[in-house]
Image 1 (tube, one colour):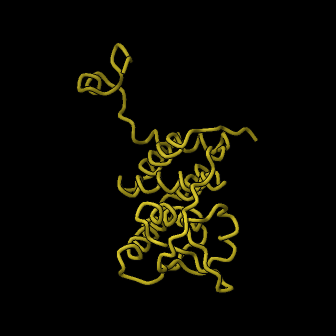
Image 2 (cartoon, rainbow, N blue to C red; image 1 turned 90 degrees about the vertical axis):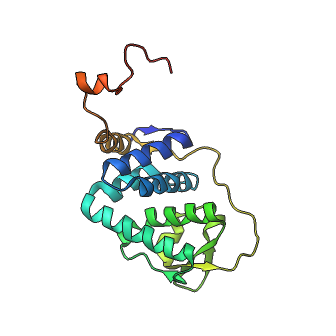
Amino acid sequence: MTTILLSYNEVQSLARKAASGAGLPHGVAEEIGHAAVWLSARGVDAIRVVVDALGDEAQGRQAVLRGQAAIDALCCGETEQGLPEDQAYSLLLIGLAGAAAMDTGLNLTVQQGNGDVAPLARVSDVGGLLLTMKTLRVMPDDAAPACSGSPRPTPTDAAAYAAALSLAARTYVPASDLSRAQGAGAGTTDND
């Protein structure tokens, strides 16, 4: 398997563009970009996760929108806990919740089946959470330091990278004389 090492900026940008290309609203696509960075910092091939979640576009989009709404409800205090309904998309939803925890400073946690609680801001390895995740909830802040994750993003496999580029390409303006006259493309020089 060929892997590609991207920067965190490239992971965020490609995940965001792929989500936009899959038809998600730009705000949700932006959140997916943040989630991809959060996941990649914790040892997950985030581009693969995004592509897998959005590969079955209609079902994936709906699951992501429902999950993002549930996370927003947790962050706003509308609910005390939420359970990801679509287990097939749990990894992306954990990434969305982890990014929200880091962005808002809230102590979003995963409550596991055995009763243990794992604060998302301090999770360094996401893989183990999926098997035992029961619910997401907001807990009182215990002021422990956040885990920043890995200094380098997790590599992505070439097939996931190509699939993400394909999704992103759906957002590009078709090349034509009219589109170029209205500012699309680099023009005769590309020096910016």
